[in-house]
Amino acid sequence: MDNTRTILILAVEVGEALLQNGAEIYRVNDSIRNILLSYNIQEFDVYVLSNGIFASADENGPNSCSIIRSVPFESLHLGRLSLLNQLTRDLCSHSCTISEAKKRLHESKNAPYYSAKVRCFCCGIGCASFCFLLNSGSFAIMVSFLLGILEQHFLIVLRKKNIIRFFQASIISMFLTSTVLFLRNMDLRFFQNHLHILQDKIIIATIIPVLPGLSFCTSIRDFYNKDYLSGMIHFIDTIITSLSIAVGVSIPLKIFYQFLGG
Amino acid sequence: MLISFFVSTLAIACFSILMSIQKRELLLCGFIGGISWVLYHILQTQGLGKSTSVFFASLVLTILSRAFAVIRKTPATIYLLPGSLPMVPGAGIYYSVYNLIHGTLLEFASKGIETLATGIGIVFGILIGFFLPQKWFHTICQKEKAN
Image (cartoon, rainbow over all chains, first blue to last red; front, top):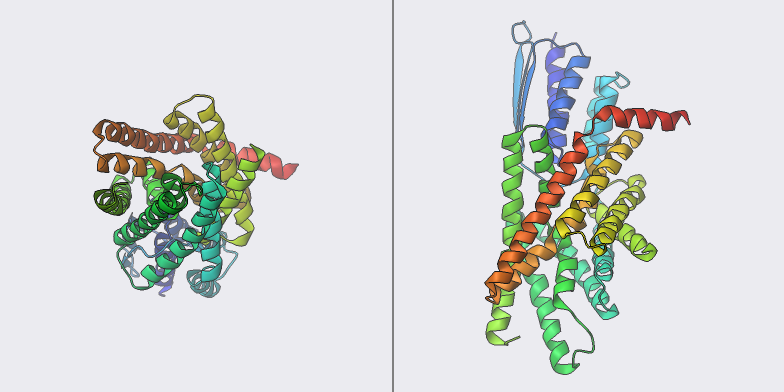
């Protein structure tokens, strides 16, 4: 009977999908353990890192098996996360069969993103709203709306080309800063500062989508659950992303002030 | 204040779309984020420091998202993440780099330390929010269901 094996594979695959979509270590560990426990599997052990899962079950029995999965970080999709969470809940209460669960796992792994147009538009609205919250003028809000749309479009293109995330953050912040500085200069020279483009507010509002919010939150929660190693991995990710944003902002600033004097 | 609550709700709901959160959770995400943003703003205008107000705002954010996570049976991350996004100190990163470029090193140091302190404020807000035992949330949630 290879029941142990099927369930272990299912549980680890659920865990893998959770981990890929930005779950914290504690949740993945708990989900796998609870699924295995609810199917009465003995002598199992699970070890989860932020980029890998190791699990074995029925160690001294005839059906002993073990699985190792390497999980590269893909992309953030919190909708999938909550679908998978529901699936785990249903599996633990035995309200869905294993074949059904496999189908649902496949469905939730491939749950669609919002369409590119919707995402671009929403990014624009979000950036514009933050620009408003920072007390800037109506023209600045319009600029940040347009920049937000462009930014999200850029991000989608960069993600398709599989460029490293740190570099993405750098490129995006470089693009934002140089556009805003250019507009500011135009404003000063041709409109005598009537448009009230305040570079800092626009940049701060439009930079929000590339900030490392996910890895920051996850690292705190990993530390809280005493998963220090995985917490450290996410923490370093946060710091490097912030530094690459800083680099992306500083290069255009330096060039502009060197050659145009402000 | 009401306007800024609505605008921040709108903004956070929009950013939740970027994180592909399901449609039925979007408004709630925005609502929770809006509350914590307004709280952050009020505390700051009352003269509390940036890191202190971020601390209290993220504490409230964590408690609210844990409560709603129990009620709606979803992971708390879904509410926590979009809500904390505007509080992550993007402004601090910008200003410290700006001052570094201009050679005003004293300003750079003070802005850099402020950024760090804000980050630490968020960390402790979230951590202390998670220290509350899960049982409390379950009992509150069950009371609400009984009503």
